[in-house]
Image (cartoon, rainbow, N blue to C red):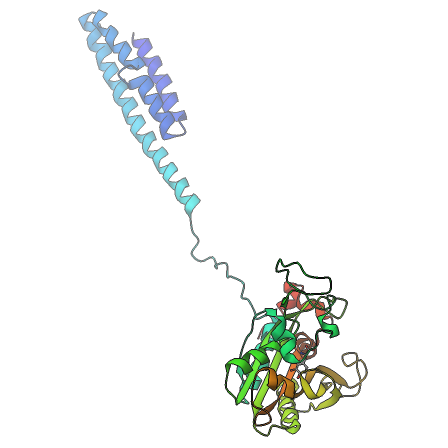
Length: 350
Ligand code: DAH
């Protein structure tokens, strides 16, 4: 019996020492010291012993139980500490580690240029108006004196929006993606009272696209309506703009041209800020860079919006923002502006 007790002691010691988790340790405790455990079974057999043996063996049995309970408590504490430590280790936060800073965004160069253009005109008293990108043909064409057979109304040039109506071949839906920002002139003249000084930035759409034409690009439109406005006011305004935008040495010139909604109409050029008009790749050797179109608002436009002419007259202009950005920042290829390559866009930090 005594030998069995010693054997159990050795087995239990081994089980306690080799337990690697609190659960396994507890299982060992149940197995050896629990009510149904080996040790209890052994004690039950004590009844069969002589009183003398019972005394010595009982004494040893109590010692052994005390030894095992003591060992169990020590091992349990150790394992609990270890488990707590490894949990803490897993959650450990190094407060000295620098945080992951979110990447700082920058304004897209097109939006930056748009803002700067509007801001320059605002110093001359112009305020910003916007118009819808899905336009009606009246605002985009008719009211601007663009006749029904004008080439720009062609399917090759204009994206028409299918309104579900069956039409004869050659007839278009009245809904389209605006091909320029000029319809905002009409919207303002119809809803506001002169005098007017407005600029209108935004996206425009044309269905032609090649190396130098994108189907979606951006313009800034300008309109000034007042009394006794002259072509000199137009040139002075655009000259101020070009000098503010490109630099004080830049000059503008107006080349006679035709747009149905202005008379006289002109093409607006700025002297090349890159080569100081000597001729370079940016100005294709000409010394001048085309910025857009302009002119004196056509009497037929006043008629369309029922504004009294010549009591009121005025000028209008429209410039390409994408082109402006290319020239301002020396961008080698216009497509870079819309490719969304962060290596390119990230260079436009203020
Ligand atoms: N809307 C014209 C275009 O997209 C540009 C333009 C020319 C606008 C003359 C004007 C203007 O306001 O007077 O080609």
